[in-house]
Length: 280
Image 1 (cartoon, rainbow, N blue to C red):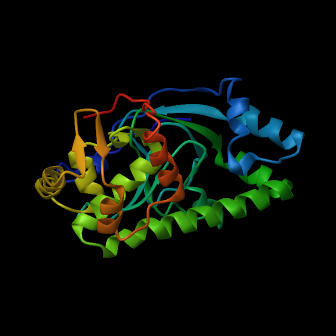
Image 2 (image 1 turned 30 degrees about the vertical axis):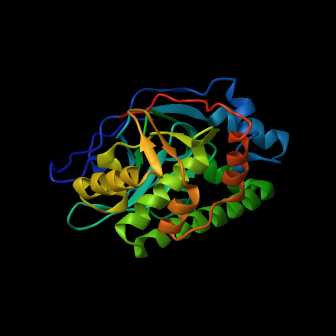
């Protein structure tokens, strides 16, 4: 697989300024265990699963690298192995509307394989990211011969549609609600119970957070500062702590998930969070 260098305008926000992808290499044998956790590959006949494993390559992308661009013909079928990816629709002014944030085990750009059309979104590596990549023609051939893969593919498209709809709901919220939803999602993905509340590693810079919720970075910083002053969040260089989850959920116009509520009960037992190094 070859890397395509794409020119860009300096007026675009940071997440639409791609850099070149790193090298492509064969997927390691250790990925066999990972494949068993990927919903689209679960329950496949051994012969199809072996064909899948043998055709996959690991592709590394630096933070900010453009994986593919809206309107391009798919060159490969991708699954996130490490890191995370965001998908956006670009506007005529060069800015983008956030569609999804994709994590390990989730597919990237699957919708383009439904009708042989072009990609509907632009995909950007949100961190140092590894994807499992299969040539588009190989995936299409396997899809044609495996009813099990077809069934899983339809289920995957359903998950992507629901996820995209949930992300788009935030577009009708105010800036405070959109930022609150992003913090809640980070807590759902990476939050750990601590005696103080939910401790969450930072995975976005302030600029990236502002870009994704559609506000000026100064507005985002002021909003977060007001919440710190109110005492229901605190933050450091690599992490933040949500002290009042219900308050943040009220601002987001959402309910605290049972998963997060369950983690909060652990704080009473003195559970210690597992901290992660984050980009700042």
